Image (cartoon, rainbow, N blue to C red; front, side):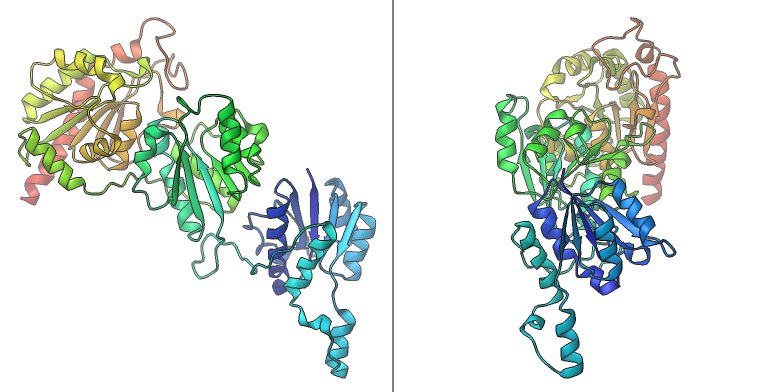
Length: 507
């Protein structure tokens, strides 16, 4: 990796004027590591610049020789002197850096003009242009840009117009938990173009999301499953982006971004493809996944705890009223959604338990139960309905993603396993009861919000895996079998009692 040190100790205005050169360097040498030596009191103006990898701040009382000692440890390849003072000359001579280039300061021309009013063609160039001319000495082509100030708070300061790629090709729930990251990213960098790369299955989830400018679809379980697809996608993405954010810890995703030569590639330290990333962020199991994803933005100088999930849809009322008419349901009827399925077999609560809860709620609250799920959950859903005494609406495999979001959002209560639809209910602010068996809250994927209740048992064998499995490792499956319908009904009663009470007050 090529290491480049830019030296401009002061002052504030001059430091700001160096930013076009920094941007040019990172754009034309994306795999380089950019260092910037500056006085400590001016370092803050550069801290959020995504094109600078490391700031070397000259402390207030620090000698130039102490700074040189620190710089030597970095084994810099190229030094760009934009200061041209005795101090910067000493630094360049003693830092043992093989190649040094300096900008032409027009020292004598400026003084002749001030004191003798003698004009020179050298003075026609702006300082930014003189800084950029240094790139020619490195064999690069300088492109004129305006000075940039990067900030996370001030709306009146120009934010960068970056091209940012976010890759999330995991499951439905993981996709929902990425929405806070997208929202904060767009809020902080409103001029940037944000592209999401996801799977066809979850593409519709983001269709109405205003934080995304473009959606790309990778069919990793179909046409994009082969090894050749990695190179095909790398070619497609090459030269299109400044930054890639990878909340999904995928080897394939990381490799694609590296082959595409995206300059800044940000992911987690436990990513399978971490070797291909430029910036690694600690993965904290004690943090919710939505908050954990936001940690990736700290590399760009963004700190946020805005973890509210979002799954916006349009024309939801029209579709919902059509649904009510089709199934002859009155508008005032209490709707309770159930999601008995899951990708992982051990995450599925027992079908007979779901059936018992559905029957009891129908009897006690005179509600209508709707069974949700994908076509892969049909066997589970049919098992639940076959054991129910009360009638239910089986929508398993009959809704697309947009319809699923609309219908869940109109439920008064949602009862679910640890799954993607659980996060949709949370994102649409629907009160929910989540049943956790092999997984636990500590893994960071529990539903957010004060309308969510997690029902689980305190067992020494939990959690038995990160996601769940095909069967219980110990063979007893106590985490689900011992979690009785009465425990779930108790929590459902709390939610419905509050809702009915509030509705009666509104009447």
